[in-house]
Image 1 (cartoon, rainbow, N blue to C red):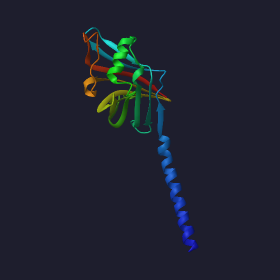
Image 2 (image 1 turned 135 degrees about the horizontal axis):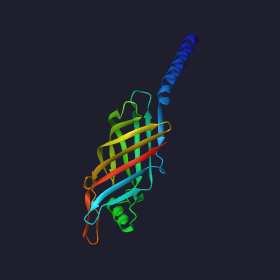
Image 3 (image 1 turned 30 degrees about the vertical axis):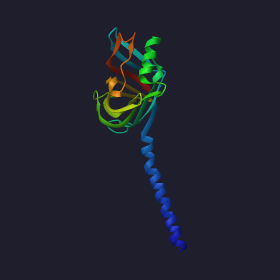
Image 4 (image 1 turned 90 degrees about the vertical axis):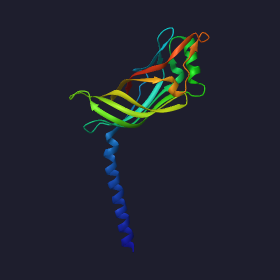
Length: 200
C-alpha cells in the first residue's frame, strides 16, 4: 500500500515537472509591451461647415503581447485606451463641444480591444515591418462596434511601433456631430483616427 502511494506521488511530481517545463518556453516566447504616452501621437481629424479640425490625445495607454519566435509575429493580446477628455484641439470652445458629444462625464475612455487577427504579412522580405489587419471591439461614448483595424507593425529590439489610420462615423456610435454658434456651424459625421504609437 505504501509502495502504491509513493509511486503515485512520484508520478504526480513527474507530471507537474513536465507541465512546468513544457509551459516555460511558451511563457518566454511571448513578450509584453506597454504603450509609451510620451512618444508617438494619436490624432482625430474631421471637417465642419467652417473649417477642417484636428484633436490630439494627450493621455493614452495600452499593452500588446507578441510572440515573435515564428516566421511571422503573432499578436496574442492588444488593448489601447485614450482618455476622452485628453483630446485637445487648442480651442476651448471646441473641446467643450467634443466632451459634450462624447458624454465624457459618464464615459471617461475610448477603448479598442483585440478579438482576433485577420492577417499578418511582411512589407518586404528583409524588413522587420508587417502589415496587420486586426479585428476588435471599439467603444466610444458607451457604444461598442466590432471593427477591422489595419496598421503597420514594426518590431525593433525592445520597442514596437504601431502606425495606421481608420475612418469612422460618429453616428455609428450614437454620437450627434457637435454644433456651434446656435447650429450655424456643423461638424461632419465622418472622422479619421490617425495613430503613430511607441510601445516598450
